[in-house]
Structures are given as C-alpha cells and as structure tokens.
Image (tube, rainbow, N blue to C red; front, side, top):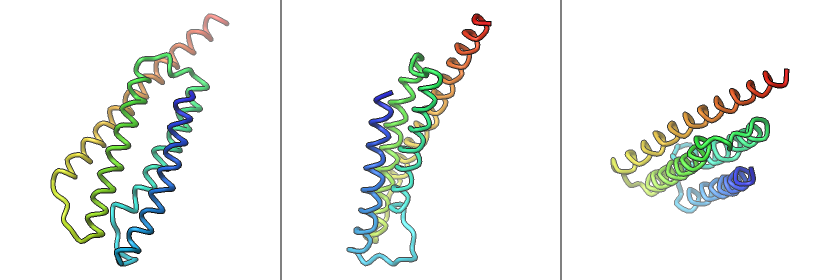
Length: 144
C-alpha cells in the first residue's frame, strides 16, 4: 500500500510541475495562446491517471487486498512504465510543436506502445480485482 501512496504522491508532483513547465515553456517561446499542443495534456494525464487512479487503486487495495495476487504486482509496474512512457512522448511531441518542428513516426510509435502497455496493465488490474472478489466471497461463504 505504501508503494501506491508514494507513486500517487510522485505523480501529483509531476503533474503540478508539468503544468508549470507547459505554462512557462509556451510563454518563453511565444506560442500562441489559442493553439493546442500535446504539452498541455501532460499535466492532466499525470494528475488523472497518476494521482487519482492510483488513489482509487489504493482504496481497492485497502478493501480487497489486491496485492495478494501476482497480477497486481505486474499491474503496478506496467502501469507506471506505461504512464511515464506516454507522458514523456507527449512532452517531447508538445515541445516540438511549440518549437515549430515536426514530430516523426517514432514518437507516435512509442506513444502507442505506452497506450498498449497501459491497456495490458488495466487488464491485469481487473484480473487481480476478480481474484480478490472471489477470495472475499469464499471467506464470506465460510463465515456464514
């Protein structure tokens, strides 16, 4: 559980820092206010997928003991790798946009790998949750 808390806290810091970076980087490079860039979404991704999602998983861990499943350990590490890869690619792509440069297929490819890894991690979370629910139902049946 402590690992989930630390990760959520780290993503809060990363989310706030990325929001500050976005604002200052676009301002320093005279990027037009109305135009969009991937850089603006990094802040939201870190706060929503990093902080909020992991705090929800922390509550599920507290309720159901998800970490008893090996699938949960795989979920945790894959999820974090996926989120970091996705955010780094978004940052890189966004910085290139602000600087007026084209991003290549490599950035899109790595971003796609980040999203596919995130999908695999979420499947593992549901596997771990399903196992925890079965375990909880079995304990309830024995107690009754």
